[in-house]
Image (tube, rainbow, N blue to C red; front, side, top):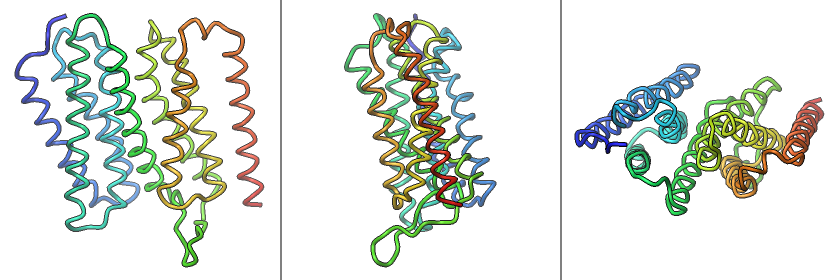
Amino acid sequence: MHAPDPTSAFGRRELVLVAALLVAMARLAQQPGAALVASLLAVVILIAGAGILGVDVAPTRAFSALLIPAVLAGGAAAAIQLVPPGLGLVPFLAGFAFLLDRTLVLEMRLLAQAGGATDADRARVLLAAVAAAFVAFTGVAALVPGGLAEPGGSGAATPAVMTEGWVVVLAAADALVAALLGYRLATFRYGTAKDAARSAVTYAIVVAVAAGAIRAVDLPRLVGPAVLTLVFYLWDALHGTAPARRREPRFLWETILLIALAAVVIAWNLRLRS
């Protein structure tokens, strides 16, 4: 494969600048507009980012390489709702721009280098995915009514009113984030998109179950997204085994167990609200 065009560096910086501006503008939006802006920004990164990766990059590879930047951008556009207006927005936007730029540089280098990714490269991609996961999980909780339990005066969390419908939305959105990031990580372990997608589903189920359980116990503020990020990381560490593992009966039983846990979490949420 040929290396990306030299002008792609300029295109990358332009993309980062535009993304930062759109994230800043997202702070002015109110629900449901904020959720729409966050979703559209993720799509913009996928579409515009494909233009800076090089014309000889296969569409499937380009898509997977842009998943972490897209999730990071969409998550930042949602999470910025938690930042008070004023100078506090500057470090948030600067941190987002830095993370997005470094992630794009990493993905572009992996696409251009011969011989595939090394263990160090995989570790860097995992680090980028974990950072994007925390930002995105925080953004989802910020947009969903009652998604973040507010701390009370005594230091305990004050449960926010949250209907069963919004619990489902919260879990589904977190599951989508985990699936997209999980798919990117799974591409390093599986030879086909189908196998990577099957692995991504397990990330989604695990995080959805954890999201429902976390909201049921009302962990305060950013503790919930942080725990979800830890769950995502631990599942990747546990699930990151040899590709032959997907043929084992245990793989199927894990999926069945996760579905059963999801049913328990749903029942738990319903009982707490009855």
